[in-house]
Amino acid sequence: MKIKKFVELNQVTKRYDNLTAVDKLSFSVDEGDIFGFLGPNGSGKSTTIRMMLSLVRPTSGVISMFGYDIRTHRQQVLSNIGALIERPDFYDYLPAKKNLEIFGTLSHTPNLNYRIDETLELVGLKDRAKSKVKTYSQGMKQRLGIAQALLHQPKMIILDEPANGLDPQGLKEMRELIKTINKDKKITILLSSHILSEIEEMANRMVIINKGASVAEGRVNDLLNENKMHVTFETGAIAKAIAHLQQTKWKNHLINHNSNTLTMNLQKEEIPEVTGLLIQKQIPVFAIKPVRSLENYFLKITRNA
Amino acid sequence: MRNLLYTELYKIFSKARTYIGFIAVFVIVSALEAGLYFEGAQILDFAIQHLKERFIFEGTLINANLITHIILNSLFIHIPFLVALVTGDLLAGEANAGTFRLLLIRPVSRTQLLTAKFLAGWIYMLSLMVFMFAFSISLGYSIFGPGDLIVLKGTINIFAADNVLWRFIAAYGFGILTMTTVSALSFMLSAFSENSVGPIIGTIAIIIGITIISTVGFSLMKPVNPYLFTYYLSSWQLFFEPEINTAKLYMAIVVQIIYTSIFLSITYVYFNKKDILS
Image 1 (cartoon, each protein chain N blue to C red):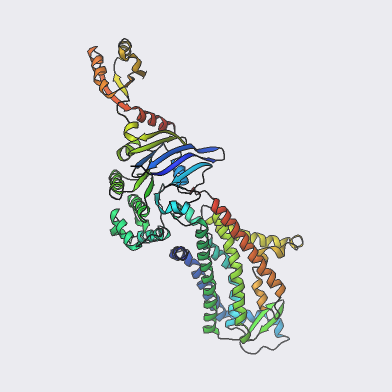
Image 2: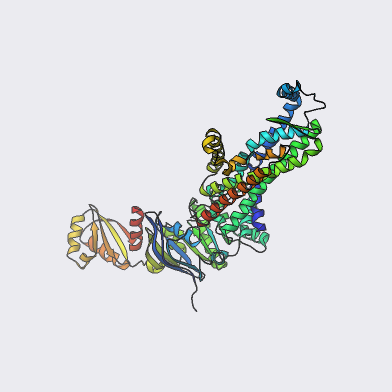
């Protein structure tokens, strides 16, 4: 079966005067994906999403959604897409139901009243439908944001940092909701986040961007392959440990060290062997911290962002 | 388009600020009519005391028509501000609230959205003008009753009671045209701004600024003045002259239409290309 490409970005660039916010970015989202769009804050995720939704014009490159060029078929694309971009801002002087009525009307939603009830029930806000949005908590606003994205039964929804401002319970509920929407409603999801664990938990495919450019793209399991790890050993005899390892087959696995830790490039199953070797030579090992190489890389670019 | 217009009207009339205009008109008209009820006779006596030496006045000069005319004079100073209060918020308010991000990802064109927003703002302005006219004249009739209208503007013009209503309707009609230009101006400024304070103050500053420059630098501005929209903001007074200066009236109408078209064209071109970063 041929996989449908719902989104294709080809060499998309956005410049603001001298600042390049997005730099020749290319990636694709397949039908049925929960696609992770990962990058540190300020890496160009929101700008990319705004270009996909025609809020911002690309400087160059092509964005195709459902086979249509967004520049020439804006209305066809937007009929099939729902989105929540950054904060869930609503007309807070109006009730939630009225907000959904406004957005549903503009999206030409059939059976609007029924859809509003159904969507509010899905996101757990049916009891608060008549409350003004200004009385809502951040978590409730996020859920209402998802409701407005789902209202017109789009083929795909784009959620930009949906976990922002949520407490742990709200975060858990949000993740459950996103999985339910993808699994039960068969809606493709593009999920933007700066938190690797969030993407890892929910997405099947992902792209990592940094400074507007793609760093890695592929299946989450492949990219976060547990066999490629940076393992840090904390020891009380660092010089002795390095000297000993230099005489073994592990000498090429050493990456760096400081006064009490050394980091090695190892596969998961090699960790016990190296640990045993150190202990055998009476080198005390206080802690072992394995970090997957991509995670390590992501942490590094996040720190530099 | 009908649905778009309905949603925009719903938003406008759900906001508290929309009713500031109606409340202001209600308070100002009521206060003026109450003041004139108690002290109008003395004020009018003072205003026409030199005329009384040469003319004999019969009947009640303070009547609904005079009151409506006085209110028209005083309120036309405030109306641009009350109009800009809503029309200046139409686009900037969405940017400020962050709702553009949800509004402009719908399958409607920005041109359609702008049209619906401007029409909704225009309907608000129209309703404010109709309210002002209906309230001032009905309150005037119920308190003071009908009578001939005396207009003091350089000369003294007296219009028979049965020759006044059409003049008020025409004056308000012209007023609606000038306020359409004011709406278009604040709408344009609203497209450039991320908060509604700027467009509201900007609109008033432009009107007052150009009016001051036109008045103070009169000799320098004389050739330019007929081409400024602000020059005609008080041209509704043309309808309270014995013979209407049709040449000036046509010029006023053409200038207002041209300025409205320019302001709206700039808004459409700019907003259709605008990156939504709010």
